[in-house]
Image (cartoon, rainbow, N blue to C red; front, side, top):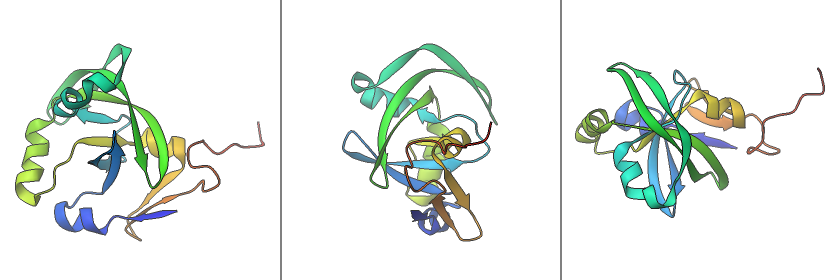
Length: 147
């Protein structure tokens, strides 16, 4: 299973995917340099009655410094597969609004490297695509027979 990244890269210079959250299409940036998934506080405010918060908060280290935020479980669908992943709610309004102002594309969150590793997704910048390295069951990590 492959997903082309050409549109997001041509419009914003960023790898973007569109996911469905509670029947709404939302745009997420793919960030292989991040270990965490992040959503903007506006996303949380819009869906807070439908999101499940975790018991702890988390810290994220960004270019702007350290930000603490609540972690919530976000259910979403990507390429006809359902996922439920932890996202940290932080203030990303300025950064996301700047991208929106420059490109016309509204970003709602960031998907980090842990998601790629857990589900077998690979970003291939040479082919300009996202593909699944575990096509038999992209919702489960690949199992190994070796110990």
